[in-house]
Length: 118
Image (cartoon, rainbow, N blue to C red):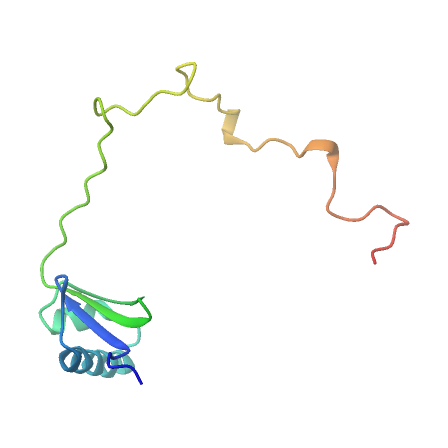
């Protein structure tokens, strides 16, 4: 048997000891049994900003945040903030009304009459 537990937890990115993680999972599971799907309620009741169960490296992981996560900044492109233009410098032409093009070959997904499927 493995030395490591199948349940893990972290608070603001810091992993909890196995016993603490098990205790948090137990409280989380009890709450979720009574309040199905209400992870926000569990977080609120325990003074957390968010609680997210996930699966990582073969273990169930409960990710707890006590502060708002900083907003993710989009990766900047080398040489400026404008996105690179397409070759030709123009956007592709849009069809009127955003319609999809008609199927090619007038084909149907149904087999032709008189032919049997095998």
